[in-house]
Length: 321
Image 1 (cartoon, rainbow, N blue to C red):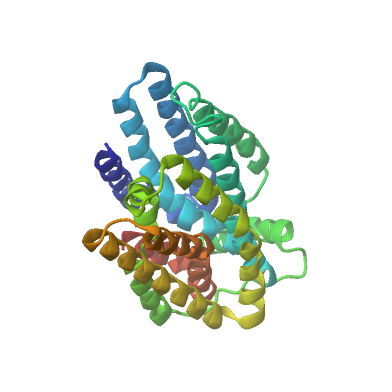
Image 2 (image 1 turned 90 degrees about the vertical axis):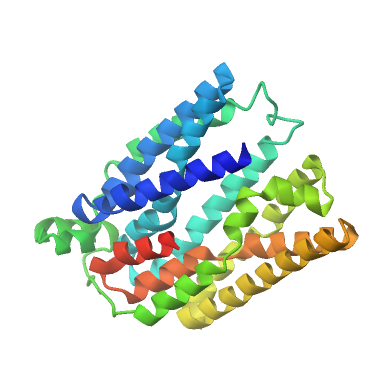
């Protein structure tokens, strides 16, 4: 079942690359980041709710396939829309706030999803139900937000772009399209090739068991790490705006490679020796680095240096690898 879930999610990701990503250039950033994403969230929530009610794994897999198309929109199109609308001096904060909000959601989820609370067979239907209700509330809140001013300028809709600038930036503001950043894009692709974040996300239960943790211990550790690393999400703002994009990118890259090396070491020790206190410690350290890993730093760095007309292409290339 775990392999099937992973496979169908990749099918959804391919669909997003071929069909949903191009809409960010033709229909607009907001159309994809808001309307398409919320529609996908509602469909996934409906499938998961029906799967919980009727105990149908096929419906759940259908929801996971639809969910696969949601990841690319969340990681790239949404970030693209926000960063194109945000003033230059606030982009670091905007990117960090996205990570912080995601951490808060995880903190709530892991607390509520504990087997002693709502993480049971009879109660987990509450999660998709809450997701659908909150998505509708977010939709009504975001309807009044205008389209990205950079995309509107690209479409020669100058007056709408001016109104959008007044809404997001204020009256005395200029749009900066930035410089080409092909070298930076290649560096981002290299980092994504060796990124183990998806491995930790998909096989987290299996990895916990192999390291010697029970399900309850794994939930408690994830909850504690999520809570501890909440303050670190604010560091990205000061690092991006204080140290600069390149030093922050270097620090995040070093953290990424250390995390991958620790995960490889842990699996090697488990393969030859078995689980022990050492494997548990190594795995906790790798999870700690994974919780601190700033993927939006890479995306923000590329979007700050690339022209607006190539944002979708760069995000597409990052997601493909």
